[in-house]
Amino acid sequence: MTENESTDSSNVAPNSLLRSVEVVIGSTVITGLAGLGIGLGLGTYVPGYYRTVFRGGDQPGFDPVAVGIGQGLTQGVVLGAVLGLCIVAIHQWRQSRIDRLHAPTAQGDSVATVSGRPTGWWLVGIVVLTASCAALPALGVGCLYGYISSDTARGNRDVHQVRLILDEHPDRFGSLSINRGPVDKFMVEGMVETQDDLDFLREELVQTFGEERADFVLAVEVRQQ
Image (cartoon, rainbow, N blue to C red; front, top):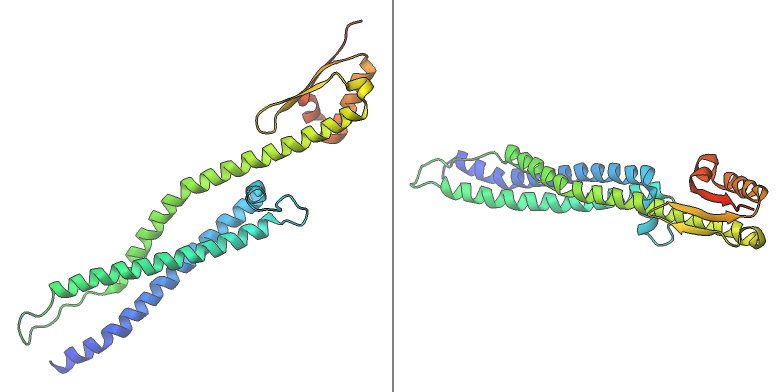
């Protein structure tokens, strides 16, 4: 073995280890930041997702933004580390095949070497892209589930508030019913005896929900005398 061959072979292990560490760290940082961004977005714009997933999500002290950041960052880092290790394993397996194909056939032949750096980062891009494409449907389902869960919970709270108003005045609104619809939809239906009763009920609903939602849910008429 020549002096150059000895020097090249002595540098293979440190260089390979350094590249492996770079790939793992790079993959971890990329997916960690992506997870942080996704968690922040869900916690900010779809807080109902985390409120329904975690026990105690309906408590006053529950912060969906903080939970989203923590969950997204943690899951992203773990996923990135696993992907990075998989990339390194695939690259090492591929490099071993290349080394066997370019092994010297006779004494004095030079050993062809292939730089792992471009291949390593190419694999990072491919795996991260594949993972992102696989995660997009799950993210879409999560967002949709969060929206539906949040609106459904809102509808349940609104129905409960309307029920309290009706129960406080059984002599005026005892005959009214609440027709529960999908998600946050519901209607207060039936008839009251006088216009004063209807005006009073509308005013209560306006104070509770606002004028637009009160008019939307109120389907009550005055009984014809």
